[in-house]
Image 1 (cartoon, rainbow, N blue to C red):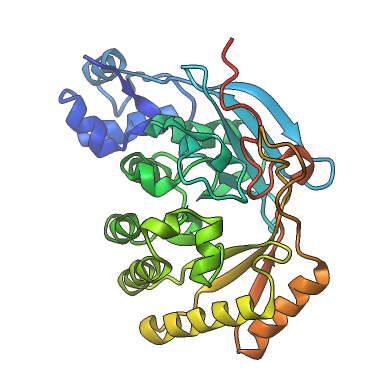
Image 2 (cartoon, rainbow, N blue to C red):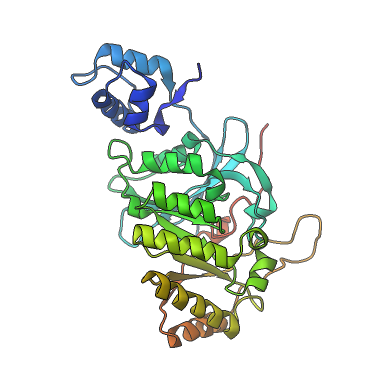
Length: 359
């Protein structure tokens, strides 16, 4: 019988898997695991229950291959090896409030969606991450924190398309938000997608307090199609219909993230198209999307083709002009600070190395 990764189960799941352990005892055991303790009998956990859990479960780990701190901001990237030798990258993101951190986690090794402005998309898909491999990224980051620091939130915006591994992503969310485990407010968890309508709808049904992030690429379908091949399978209209359903179901405004690329999607026509989409969304749902504009982070030339990076960062003037068009349309926007660029930890840069470094 396969052993259970104990850091990746809720008390309810543990009680179902180990009948000798009551739900109350399972809560205590889960708390022990997430305090870094061994499963042990106590005043509230019978010896027979502790022994049954210890026999049925284990706590596998990831190997920290590298821990890289940015020299220009407080971001930090961890390069983590999985048991099969594959490698993922996880980022520790400081929040404005001192001592609070968000963890940017990966959900897959590589990615099948091939977004042209993302380094992970160049790798292709190696495999999905297991639930424990997602949860363990947060545990590893938490172990790096100093006294008084804590993990406040989690964003599924690292390597991979979370909606393509939604079973394990939802299980991880249940553990991350479980009071006996991490106790992270579900509203501080964001799942970002390039546009999977069925996944968006399922997220709304099964995790209605979790926030949705949508990688936009462009509000103009023909431009989006050139940047994000998923547009050919799921049109922006289809994706936004699902996002609207998510908003109506959850009452949460989605985040629309747009990486601005010089001469590609950063002109006034692009801004006006985005404004039109935002107004239509608000009219349908009663909620305005949160517009997050991201400066492009270089990922270098395409392997085997030589030459230069196919994209360039929009100028500050172009970014300002883009935001001015949105403001004139009555829409607020946020210029996202994407840190850790000097260690390839910024948006779009994860996994710019080979996906596997197994020896």
